[in-house]
Length: 292
Image (cartoon, rainbow, N blue to C red; front, top):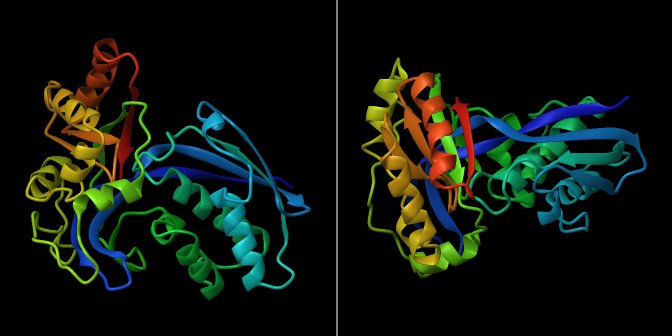
């Protein structure tokens, strides 16, 4: 019996860099939401350790052992003796190395499918431990719902229900290496980061409408945006283009880039922007979606 699941794009609505730990890892505080667009992953039970890839961004990925889907499967097999597995097939619709957690979302999707095949709850300690080892964004992608993510990704806080956000995701066809962005940020081990933005406060009552939530988010930001723009100047061009769209309330970079998003008060404005932008920038990946 073939099992399937979606791997939705992860969007950092806000991202604050707290500092760099002595071990070199960066501490973050981020409000994360998930989009209505994403990859698709299926699992056909059988012999483990194999996968195939199709979709518009299939050529950007390898089916070798460094693929995060296969890494997640290997790591979980080491945790759980006799784990049932099989052959994976990934439909890759999200750009690679783009700041929206495509690889992490795929790895988390693999863990969800393996959990379903083996009758494991998503709260199983082996799943949580494996997610953390595979990648910093994998734990938050495991349940794929809005959360506050802190530490190096391992501390997940609840979020009162967020109103739906009407958004446009845009990528200029540029892969940005996360490590290069953190190098450009320039923090030394043990060094704190001067606070550039306020974090989203999950303990406060959640805004009731998209308009109210956008107003709250406007007071936050993404501390990685400036170093990312130094690494990839196209990000600045993209943010300017998004900000100029009719009805755009907020334009911001997600994660370490290069994908950026624009937020709108309603679906009509986001749909109109999705039609307009490709004419101005035909080489860009443009997807209207809903974040929640």
